[in-house]
Length: 244
Length: 130
Image (tube, rainbow over all chains, first blue to last red):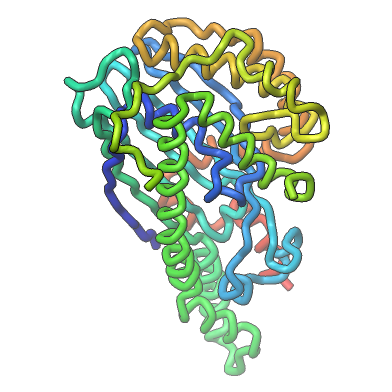
């Protein structure tokens, strides 16, 4: 089963500024869960488009509702519901045509839940933009699509079905089997997807807030302003003790 | 009250001086984190990453965004950064995850229903079997 979420938003900043903010969006005050960001590849293709792949490391707290649904064997590296996960982000920017397409997805935990977020940024007012990258002018629209897919449910269901078929011959079904069968019937997959979906709505708000903070810093202090803001956020995120 | 709007803001300044952000880092001394931008997942790569990030930022804002960036001027710095990072990715098993993500991409969505779950089911095998 696949679940979709879609939303659109307009940033009142120029397209170049928004793309820059996208690359510089971590750290920001809304991204304290993002622990690191690395570029793993970057190239310009034959059409002059800039392609970038980055890996973000995030600390995540699994919702207790999800924890309850998961078998212990998959929770090996989770203590107290805290865990780290890696996100792969790919982006393509066409500065001439004025668009940027991005895709982010989780690299681990994919056996439980795959989340794929796609964004398409488009320059709205091309005529007002010029070489000085004036952020006062221009609007950049973004459409975000998030897709959730829980494979766990599929696997459990498939397995339970096979076991169920086999067990149908036996008069007495073991309690464990019936538990698994009912577990999958109850829609563990849908539950995980629903929980993830609820979480995502609030997280998408935070992502937008984070971008806006970076853009506002750019408006006020240029790139130096962004870097100065980052320095402060960084102190908070990466070494909270020393900034106290 | 602190919001702009009273006077028009000046056009954004996206220039980074030639030394990038490093000049200011030296001023702040060593007890704070030495890097300005996002950290690398491998602390030992922070320095080369910062050098590369600064180079990229300068190239991106001053050249690429103005339609003048046709070649990657930071390739050498990226090579250094990548060299450092590759080991760290391997150590943490991220290289494997990236490979899987690539394979996953090729795979059709329908295929996760496939029965023989050698690679896909992973940890679930042991759980389901006992």
